[in-house]
Length: 225
Image 1 (tube, rainbow, N blue to C red):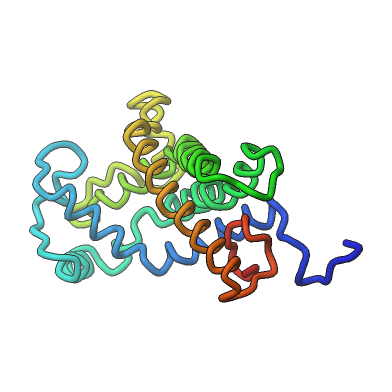
Image 2: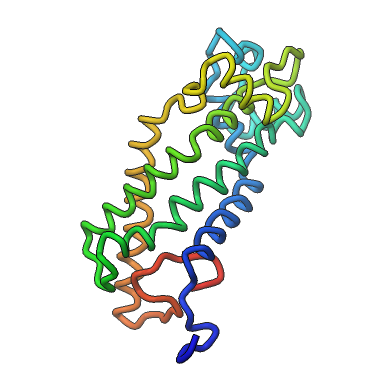
């Protein structure tokens, strides 16, 4: 681009979209056992349906849950649903974070000075949109994490099988179970995280406490700020 150094060119929406999704996938690979432990602790006490086998094992604390799963179901059980988890991050984080700046510019009609209202609106929009797009992957991920390997009788044999089984037995809408509360939650979370980050970044740049190659109104994407 004429007049810009290579490091001065703002990242495109595509770069932000892919960067956010890729970074989220890397984070998910590292933290997935913790997420699986969280799900097992949350469903502990359930006595019906597909979680009966998982509920028969008593989990105590995060570390205790991880060790118990590794001992009774094997270390691979900690990554049950990883494929769906990565699919979720690539679709969810890409929209939630990667499109925030573009949506904010849409609401401000391209103005470089975005008010708090426009930022909150952009945050809630991308948060809600991300859930609407990624909810099926979240449902499949949680179903896999809740499914115990020990004792056999697994309901889902693969990620594709899980999508097909849920759609066949529960209807296509079964893949979007829990969408409404999830939209409400993530709209709030997205506003809190991204808008807070956006405002703090603007304040730091205006106070000349640090410099950045991207405009003050843009959202951080790995490698660009």
